[in-house]
Image 1 (tube, one colour):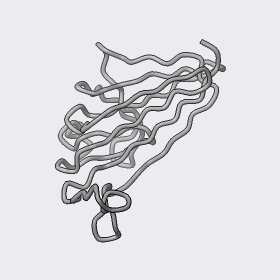
Image 2 (cartoon, rainbow, N blue to C red; image 1 turned 120 degrees about the horizontal axis):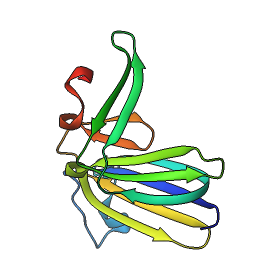
Image 3 (tube, helix red, strand yellow; image 1 turned 180 degrees about the vertical axis):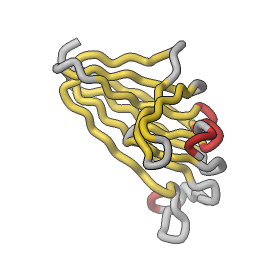
Image 4 (cartoon, rainbow, N blue to C red; image 1 turned 30 degrees about the vertical axis):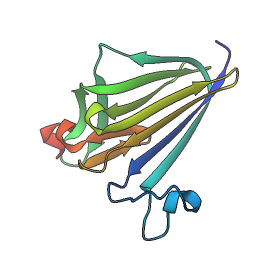
Length: 141
């Protein structure tokens, strides 16, 4: 695979949105929003892109109270990206949050669009990582 750009578009659906196909934008207005929010992330010069099937995502970081930490998190839709310099980037989504997922690819780009349910609290500890609150390690809640 030659170097590609990965574009992630992640949105949280608004369960209260009432679509109207007879109106412009299906009836979306400032009082009737289709999405609560939209995140967009672009990662360039990716040489390898794969879905991780049987491995946990490792949430790593440092906090004032715990110092350095590293926790495995399973039950995710998890993608691993490797750039031209060999650096790793991960995209991960709790499966319980995913309302829809679409992936398109051409010679230069891979676009991933994910819509999340708004019925479950979530955290976004790192760009590209969307975890249901119930998937967070107890030590970090």
